[in-house]
Image (cartoon, rainbow, N blue to C red):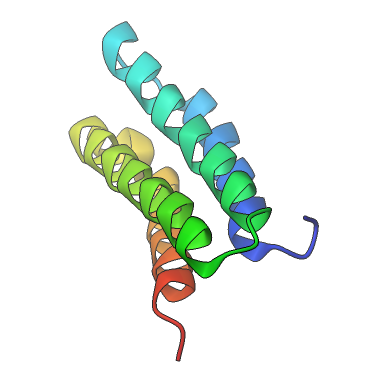
Length: 99
């Protein structure tokens, strides 16, 4: 999966999420959603049918949106994370809407 760009970015997002200072309940939610992104991208990448891949990539995109919401609540503390999430959202959207 080293050549799977979205998966690599999702790992960076998780690592950045670990460093963001947040109240405990938001931090836990952020880390769960961030790990969900990586796990669903990985599982989707391993699926053979287009429908299965789309299902897992859609779940990953929903988790990205959840992380973006937490990043908005965090404000300036999560600027770098928010930027990386935007890149990941665009890349994942592209997986779901190929040219």
